Amino acid sequence: MSEQRPQAPAGLVMAARTPWFDLTECTGHRSVRWEDGERAGVAPMTLETFHDLASVTKVLATTTMLMRLVSERLVDLDAPLSAYLARSYEAITVRDLLLHRGGLWEWWPLYIQPQLPPPRYRPGRARHYSDLGFVLLGRIVTAVTGLRLDRALAELVTRPLGLTSTTYARPAGAEVAMGALDDRVEMTMLDTGRPYPVPYRSTDFARWRTEAVIGQVADGNAHHAFDGVAGHAGLFSTVPDLLKYAGALSRYQEHDQLWRPEVAREFFAPGPDQEQALGFRRYELELQGETVTVLGHPGYVGCAVGFVPGRDIALALASNRLLVDGTPTPTDALWNDLLQATAQRSRSA
Image (cartoon, rainbow, N blue to C red; front, side):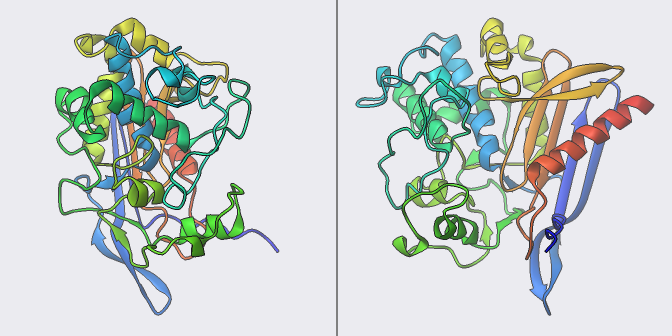
């Protein structure tokens, strides 16, 4: 049997800001319903629509807060986690977690078992992308600042950068994209043991959402275990705010009152894995006849953000890719479409 072709998102926004051109595409609908088995759009997608950023939270919130705290010498990248979190891992450093080399499980249903399991892999040996690592990094931010994570984000990132539409847990406006049909993705992960063979099933949890997820974070751990505020997921934002954030990071030297430029450059540099910097993922982009490095991150619900340090280039993607009755288009595929569209526009600019 051939694999089912991925279905396109109900709504999609792609935007790029460069010194040579601007690119903006906004199509489709932010919410849907089913009529006679067919998907029908309910409300139009706009540039002002709020989106569940999912794992984009890992960079916009957690990584950027840590850039500030490292710049202020309140966090040491090479300190063990136990320096900040009592009874935490001695063999794993802050740097390990930012590089996804801490050896932790990739995912664990913390709404069923709140205690983190022992590492799944040997720390420091290889990259294993982990939500749990960023849950712990969020806890380090809280421990160091003495603030709840959403308050720390406001003080360290969103307020200084003027990100008025970026907030944890609940969007700041009424025009919100539907993030998911319900909690079926998490239930399936538990019942199939794929992609992570955790020792629990969906029957071990009683508070599943059975209605459309709108205005709540789709991620189960962020919603059910952390009330929408966590280091790995929970942020909502708009495409204009994503572009404003990416623009600020691309012009990082102009914001030396927030972070030391040498610290920012350390966060941007490749680690042992070429595609991974400290928190940020690294992508190649052909632009104006040269290959540049885009730093950014995708999110499971269908958003992504990226920037090119020192080049005043900002990229943002937003979609509601999970609103399908079959296989959704991967966020990485949508992100690659934006990178290719930006490269193509560059060739004709």
